[in-house]
Image 1 (cartoon, rainbow, N blue to C red):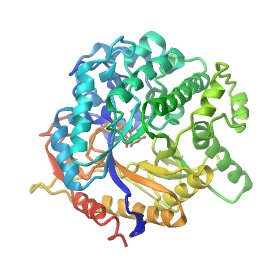
Image 2 (cartoon, rainbow, N blue to C red):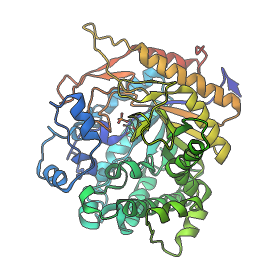
Image 3 (cartoon, protein in one colour):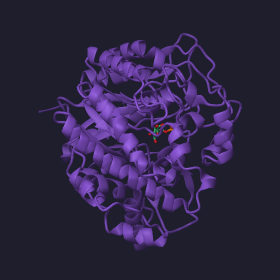
Length: 488
Ligand code: BGP
């Protein structure tokens, strides 16, 4: 039954990732993860932050980070201290009325080195109590098994995702999660934005820039291992759990032809295939699509596969599709087309759209387009795993935060979600990105805030850490309570 245009059981939610929120660096037996090594000088201005964001991990930076045990230049080691504050934060989520909460599990809390014989009991205990607390408050759990951060030892010793051995380490980790949290978690997601490896190789597939001869070759080899790991996780889920919901996720790069020049239209098709559909085709349709052969030839990519891989991929496909959606762009063969920032990439500018403070082009209708495109192509239920507006907020002296721009952003996207549902799209839920302010993933700053809950910390981790409700908190609370009735 539909109610106010949204299904009665629509899952209004919020999302975070452990590496951006937890902190608790080296506490509870946690090992060092690849995201713990990402560097930010808190004194940098916006231009310096943006310049750094364009750069990938180098050997020099890696060694420097490994030698530095402090948190000063490493904001992802600090997060927002969710590791300690989660009981109070969950109270706020409860007050907000969240139906579902998405977070990732930190692999290096469960297996500190990735190849340990036994899991770290303290890590298991932490997630048990976090998940039980959520259940106590009647909040469903959407767990991401890997959101970029793998134990760094796996990179040092084995070369990370390039090495096929990592599939077994990953599955050993997954098995522990299913054994311990199988009854608690409602939706499982083996990989956050699996296409991220192509655009941000350190985050997605843990490759160090100056250690690769053919970057594309390495990226797609890693990706193949992730696809096999994904399929084997699906297989394991069906063996170990009852009726598991286990999904795929991409960072969705919605693109329109820049002009009606047929070359631009063809470019749009190629951009769709290479940046979006390839990844979903493998995980949903269970095989490598033919159009990738041409791409692989062009970049001289030869993926090593085991004879059984094709069967594994074919037999173990996901049962829902999730994606992040923040912006849209245009596709063109015109190399000189004006560019702007976007999630994970530099995007071609669309003159019809306004951009956020960080250059990301706001396009609510693009969300309806995306939902229709993905549902039409795959005919599987969809889940919007991330969406939101990252921007500066001001904490007033009286503890209020007035963020009408965020309300506008969310409202316009929710209206288009409702349109898509009326178009016939099966949409399970929506987990707003960064429901509580956290360290941003690209720039690594706190001043790119997404939350409806403000966290009093600056780019250097200074501040009380106190949580405040923004105006958007009360607005989202009403949306959830009325299941979207108040949207115009
Ligand atoms: C996605 C990531 C998230 C998140 C989001 C927003 O790609 O899955 O971890 O951070 O983008 O990006 P940013 O934090 O760079 O603004």
